[in-house]
Image 1 (cartoon, rainbow, N blue to C red):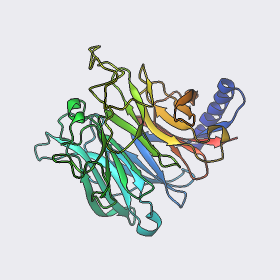
Image 2: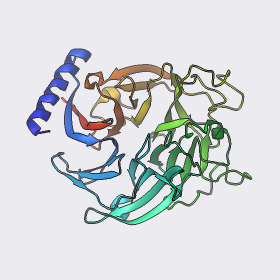
Image 3: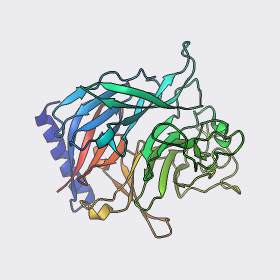
Length: 369
């Protein structure tokens, strides 16, 4: 799509945001158009961006969005169902060591019957991935390519969090510690196991596990106070926002605020001793996707609020919390876009980047007026 058409779309977004939300606080600018199932994006110190697309494409986008270059030598991925090349993050010392980390689904056998979640790290030289190292393979083998989780986040202590979904057909496994279905995992930057992981010395438990009883975690973020937030898809209803703590069982599927897609009861229980309640939940489902906590100053009205993109209602939910970490207000923004929003990222200058979903998707910048 040419720049003139992109500018006209941006003007339309601006007009709609003014009319829907009253006093205008932001402009929406279509930054890049015509993307193929984009999933995640990371900003480089140069002002450029690395973007993943589920079919297995890794793209370097210029600072102004006018140039897109393919990065070669991406591992072969399973692009089917919910699978593909998924999240991407930078090592905390990326400027010094050049490591990028990315998650993807792939077959684990020559017969291509079973697949699981992988995490690699690599460096980029001359628009090609080099020094590729696999640092994690989930012990969560499945046939259907569904519920991978696949989110990555580096904590302040330099360890890497990985979300791993329940595989849809394997939901009961989320309650057992001998597998990676329905878990949030924590590893060191080289794939080794941190010495203070909660199940490290528990017989039969996998040492990467940080927390469990989780369905399909699609967002993870650590705030400036060190709290780790996670959001996940419920079934029909029961999408959750949680504060993650080491060793805690979040209940799926023994407890849930949702029902099965068929209308059948998954569990008669919404709470149970020894299982954590969500900080907040949505019934009916919104299908939460990406998440950021806005800690910049460009938009003071959003400061320290949790921002969660979603797929069903095609908007962003903004949650305000009180000192007790209770959600006291939920607002809706960017409904005027009218597209499923796959991800939301806070940029270094305080602007936001929204990623829309599926084919012919867009990167949309949220800019201050």
